[in-house]
Image 1 (spheres, rainbow, N blue to C red):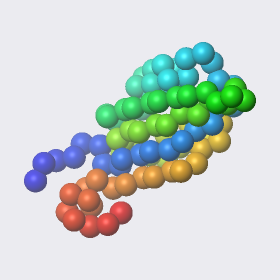
Image 2: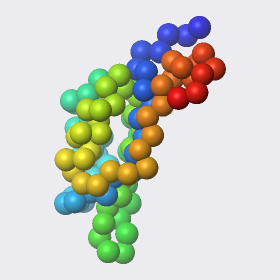
Image 3: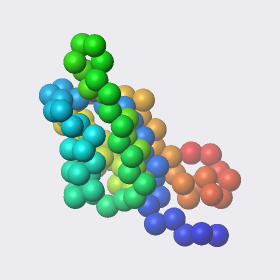
Length: 93
């Protein structure tokens, strides 16, 4: 069985309180510089009211740190944290 270096597949949506022009690059850069993990994907879009919503996907061993950081930037929701080790063994969650 392949060893999984970063155990938790962490996904969430984030409504950014004070969006900049480049929310995607700022989130991506900060997370890469401050958290251990891989498979980072950040996609952001701004609605007609000027609210930037970012979708984040990241594999890490410390998903609570990602949640804490993102919560400091705005409202987080649709949070999913999946244990990929359990999934690889055919277990739920």
